[in-house]
Each structure stands twice: as structure tokens, then as C-alpha cells.
Image: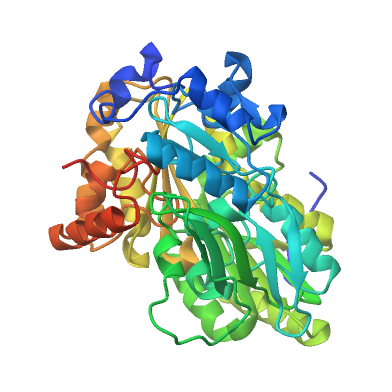
Length: 497
């Protein structure tokens, strides 16, 4: 074996500091009613006291995202426990023209799950029951408020795993995952949620319940309406239940951390991994040296490798034949090290060590938050050959501001770059170097301005960089069909007319 070593043990919108950052893109309040005492009394007539939140202190956590980057001024948060309660809430809000902000685990990065103004927050966290699991097909039903990690734990105890894995799995909820079409680290292996969601239960703006909770792999009876709600960010309806196709739990998982000399070498390694590992390759993630240093600084993450590298790759395989898969993985890694493509690397020896490697990659968002008061985050899809060139270009643009750190990490296996620009504070001079350049760069390569985080309130004005005018018009027409009064998550996804 050629391993050097075995792995060792290891702001609100109104805030003056950020108001200039967002003032130009914060839409004005729409023509909606304001919540009054009669409205609150109505909701209390069919919800328990603990399900109706009106005091300012308690509302703080509902009104603000986890990054403290986006916040609203809602005076009312509701926590339904059933689809019937969601239906009653939306029916009333639609009749009274009260705007609604759907909310799950509130782990998003583009402000999609917090109000912009004073929308009624409908938080689905109390709808947290896992339903039936078909042990033959692997199809499970679950309420929208089930935390992804809880769902995965349930599935693993029954011989299956969830078909997605995110860094925020301990707090994100499956309804929010579907509403944003979350990707995560295993998309290269499982594919997207558009293929693994078998059915949905959705409540429309007027309270109508659409029930397509089938456990069928094949159903070619007319329009596949569920696809409209996957990735719609709650602007067309509120997802309340989901039917999800889950793969069998692998009996063997291998994880390695590898260092390479350049991003081009990382691409070459990916191509060789696809051909050499084939069906067992389950993840291929990268981070750069800046991100690695940030994690060491703020979380005490040890430097696993004896040699520092510009780019690091976290590679994982899953399979059902331990002897075959482990030998295949080891042989592949020996080959790429022998020919110099991978100058340094280490392989996890057990599950605990695997978690430590994954922590390095999955906690980078938190590392950026710890590094600076302001983090400009961009989630883009690009051709693999052009992904890191954007990071290098942004580093050049920010040479005039040495206090700013630019880093890139993401899912090399599916062409998704997370560009992070960490600054001491939000400042228009920084933003002017970022936007619209990042969007123009992405558009010029026919990429996507949102690979997996969604559009939220951050990017409606950038939607045209990825969608043509006729496509945006068609989206608005669909919105008008499902939500003619526009009460569902207003100011999000679609640009203002």
C-alpha cells in the first residue's frame, strides 16, 4: 500500500451593515392585507395555543435565517400538525389575501424560507411523522417536517438509506429539500430528487389538497404534476407529505481524502474514477487550500495529509460486496498514486474516521461564517473544465482588497461550484466586484445561476441569466394558475413585472 498514513483522530435586511447590500434588490411590499387581532383569533379557534406564535422574542427565530443574512417582520407564525390544518390556514389566508411564507428547517442560503416583509409564516416542523415503508420497493412516505437525518436513521434501521445527503441533514426537513430540489453530495450516485420522488401531497393557495401519494414506479396517467412543485420553493403550493424511493443500505462504504496539484488533475482523477470504479463511485467532492486552512483555523480540523495541496478531493464508494469493493477502491488509489496523479492521500479506516473526513467538506459553510461577518455565497452549475476558473478569476478581482478571502468547493461529480467570498463586512464595493460578473460569467458558459440552493429572494433579478424571457413568462403563467392572488411566498423565485 502506498498510503502515507492511516487517518489520525482529529443579518437582517434592515441592519445598517447589510442594508446597502440588499436595498437595491429588496422588493417593495405587495398589495396584501396585514394581520390583525381577528385573524389571530380565527387561527386560535382551530389551532392549539402553542401552534400560534405572536410574541416578538419567539418570532425572532422564525423571522431570520441561520446566516443572519435575511430577515422579515412577521407578527404571526403558525405551526400546523396536519394537512387539514395547513389547508384551513391557506384557505383563510387566500380569502383574506394574507401573504404566506412556508418554512421548514430554515437552512436555506438564498432567503427563500424567511419572510421579506410581514408574511404569515407557516412552519411545518410539527408535521414530523415517518409513514409506511415498503420493504420490497424501498418506497417510504413521510411528512414534510421530518428532519432528513431522522428519516435516514429510520431507513437505515430498516435496511435502506435516504437518496440524498446534505451537510445540513441534522436540521433540514424533507419538505424543504423537495421544495428546493436539494442536491447534496450523492447526486452523482442517486440522481436528483426529480427521479426519486414518487409522489407528493401538496396544499394549494386556496386550500385545495392535491394527493398524488402513490408508491408506484410507473404512472403514465396524464401530466406529472408533482414535478411542478419540486424546486418551486413553495410558490405554487405547500408540500405536506412525500413518497420517496430509497436505495438499499450499502454493506460497504469507503472514503478517502486525496491531494492533487491542480484542479485539472482533479478533473482527470474524476474521469479515471468514473471508468475505474464505475457503479460503486458514490461521491466526488472537492475543496481548495483556502477552505482547508479555514477549517483547521476555526474547527481544529487536523491536516490529514503530510503534504499541502492546492486542491483536495473527498472520494467515496458504496457497494454490497465488501471484499470486491474494498479491493477495487484500494487498487484504483494505488494506481493513481503510482503514476503521480495523486501525490498524497489517506483512506479512512473506520466509520469514525470517515465522519471526520466528511466534516472537513460538509462544514465549510460554517467555516466561512466563522471567518468573516459577511459571506457572499454563489451556487452555480458550470462545465467541469470551467468550474475553478471562476474562483481564480474572482481571486484576481479581489487582489485590491487583501482582507477578502475567495474560496471554492463543491460537487465536482455533477459540476456544482460553491463560490464563497468572505469579507469583514457587507460593503457595496465588494458587491460591485461580484455582481453581475458572476452571473454573466455563468451565463456565458450556459451554466445555471442556481445549481441546488434555489432562487429565493436573492436571485429573482438574476433568473434571466439562466432562463429566456419566454420561459420566465411561462413560469409566471403557471404561478397565476395555481396562486392567482400571489399569496404563496411572494417576492421569491420570479422577478417582479
